[in-house]
Image (tube, rainbow, N blue to C red; front, side, top):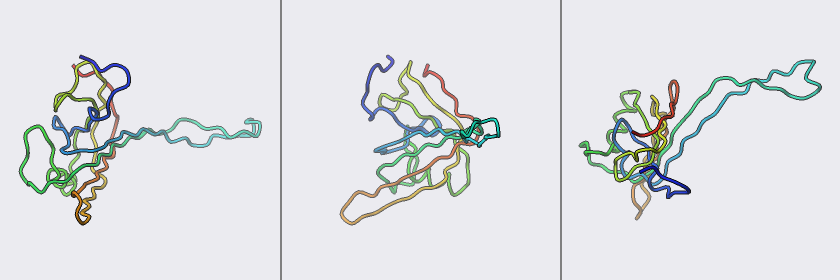
Length: 146
């Protein structure tokens, strides 16, 4: 059943392929449009712009694991590191889930991306965390989970 109204952010996640990025604590999707200046003498002294190239990115933060093996339904810290080390483009999705299953009827944004950066932080007496940034290559599509 589709999500309605204001909803809890816990259900909005990043997936790589069909697997939820494991142990995430936050995520965000960003869109942007380059706005080249197009001011000319007829602009009446006002700056004008045209819509240029579009871009998008995803970030997610979470709790890191050291288990090198793949975990069913989850994309692990080790798999993220392998994708960045191998310069592999991955299919990423941003949508709501129930457990690890996308919620039918809710919006889903998906596209191909490279991992631009990944940080793992280990503070004394705290959980080890990660932060990963995906940069889209090509279009980000919007659809409805079926």
